[in-house]
Length: 282
Image (cartoon, rainbow, N blue to C red; front, side, top):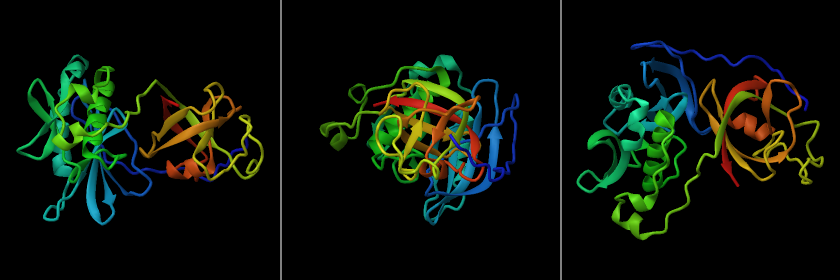
């Protein structure tokens, strides 16, 4: 696959270490205008990072766990600094260890009109679908809460995902059929590249015509049609793409993205980037 190297992606990070030092970086949807203003809290058990940015016209802060975005905190009308809420949750999470993963759960709290993520009855975080959301939000508070909780369980101790029928849900959500959760089948880490102009309109290895603007990718072994979430480890932006081609054929690279996907995760200008690839299935 042909590659473009158009420069280097530069990130300006302010790192604050508590305990052992670790620097983590990762994902926001492309519609978010991200400011390079971040802080890292690294502990011996759970490395976290907070990235402040704009979400539309509102100030926002996204909390990362082990390089993956967990929750986005959006400023309320009378609040200017959502990082305070993000820091409060980070303080609770930094003391967790892998043995805690299986005990983390989530449930609807009628009095607070929000989902509470808890560990042995102790509050870890609140998800209300307004001021606290999933970074790659489903725009459904129930799904956001379940996915965020399962993401934390997996990142902390690789615990099995919780199912909706195991949880206390918001009454109207419990009565409605739940959308299937995107389960992670496996995770790969390595370098990604992109391809496009020289291949646009040509037949791909799957037999379909390659559209450089579609959300697709080439992988050496994954079956055609497999969906994967690709997260740029330099900036945290992610995209879900469908495998429809074979490659990359350059040593050291694990996935080749379309131009559209490369732009969505912020690696179009750099040509290559370190990524995490979560295989979601078909």
